[in-house]
Image (tube, one colour):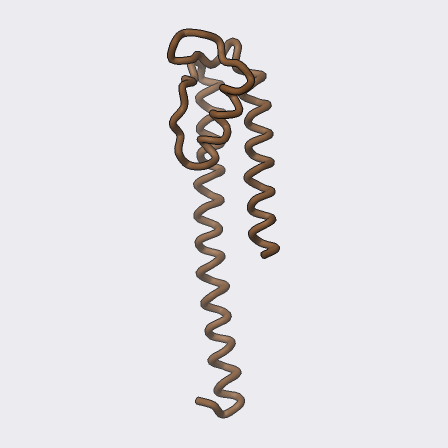
Length: 109
């Protein structure tokens, strides 16, 4: 359960950090699909949808800096997901090996 809470906290922190970054960059580096400047809810929605892995938003990065920020958030999300899957598989495998070892030591197998 501790690992779940840490992961949740990490994702919420990422959303807040990238939301602030997108808000800071929004006036000059992003544009809405209807050619308007993004507001606070637009940048929050973009940060959440990218972090959730959905990626569907009405904002488009128009500068290399904005594209780099979006790409960086996507890479963080990919690395986090890969790490968590790897960690879960390794921990479960180690628990299985340990339980088999203990059963052998106890003479149950």
